[in-house]
Image (tube, rainbow, N blue to C red; front, side, top):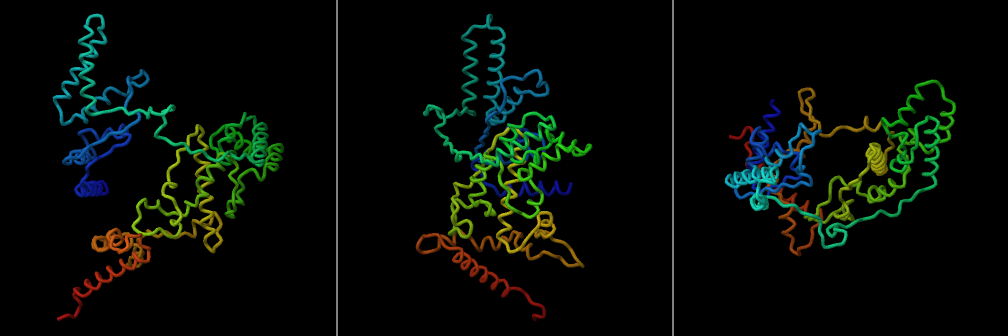
Length: 411
């Protein structure tokens, strides 16, 4: 309850500091509770939506369905649609009443087509369209190009390189699957690296685990021995040795992600920097740092990508150090930095605390943008110039603070 109250206070404080001109709710159908009038969260959202002169934009590719199927008895798509319209027309109650009346007339006319005149039905339709067009729009893909993709550019990976080792790995996987009577594994091999290691709850993996727990199977043991080098070996991982992607598609994605060097970045580079980027940020193109959407019908694919790419990025980070780590020992050697504890009635970690404490005086005294703009030639400053100017301002601030501070023993 205490944490909940603190969150409420933080949210209200944040709202009081905001001066929004535009509020955008992307995929708003996931946050329908924000559009309602009940609940603490909805009330906070309403304060934001009702800010003077603010505009609210609701975005969704699939805001609602046209009708409710029998299997969706627990859902009410029309109700969701109408509640959305209620929110959009919340400051136009007359238009909302007229819309509801027109919808009722249109529905009744559709149910009694032979009895209603066509003109009355079209009139109700035009009223509905006129009101809804003021608050919603459907945006289609740009039709100026033949394929309707005029606003999109497609970036293709270099041709997938299927190496001999990839094919050998499939042969071994297929032999193991045949011995376990687990069926064809081509699709898994095409989509995943080291599938026998990384897949979970698949038929092949279940049969493989059962075989390991069962009586000795010499045929399986021989196949696994032959497959060494094409399975993910623990000794390789434990020593932080390089692991081959083992899959043509993953190898192409590897080139487009890990090989770009973006794993060196602690955060995304600034699109409009205040000073000259340095270190690993020096040669990074901001447009090259972006999200990648990967579609697959197999559960093993996200695991494969996250495990192997994260491992390779971590391995390269460790290569930058002068220490040797074992994979299983690394977490034991890491010391958590953001931990503030009380030891023998003394607070620990206070040096790090100074870096996390939001100091309003320092924020007001040192503005990197103002410092960058103050340089005479208008070019981007170096980090050293910015840090030097900031150091001078902080020094003057501390000097004034010390000079005005009362000291013990002062008369």
